[in-house]
Length: 180
Image (tube, rainbow, N blue to C red; front, top):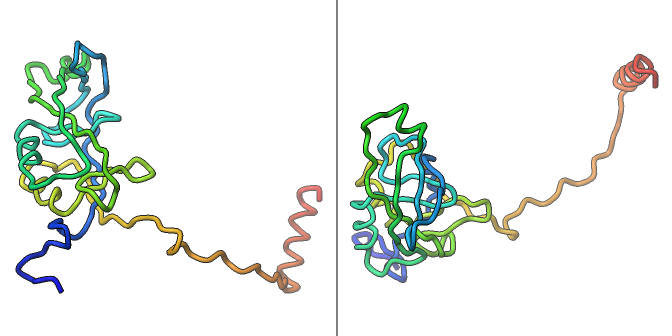
């Protein structure tokens, strides 16, 4: 039995998982030594963005995620971000914050971070609790519902076609109009 004062499940993890779709903001540009360099065309100010295929977080959010007790399904590594030519032309003088890559390696619906089969980012309730303390206004969030073969709908039974006279007449008329 779970105590209402302690909303944690059996492994200390909070119940519930969510699909997180952060602001798309950048892309991989190149490597510079051990550091990956990412170019941003836009950045609307969120602390979590997607620079396909990477998930990026600002340094304050990285520290909060690193501070989770026994985090699972991810690691953090430094990346370098810079504005693309488009970014510099359309937002002159704007500086990008320091970003960190979230290396997602967990199982969706089991670890703090995981990728679903369609590439969606799945985050645990406790990660969502951290995210909600930061700016993620451009992100969309949805309850995660894992696909399961045991819950798949059964196929529709074969349909018996019973055509009324009017429906049959309309079908024949259309076929004749089209040369059939």
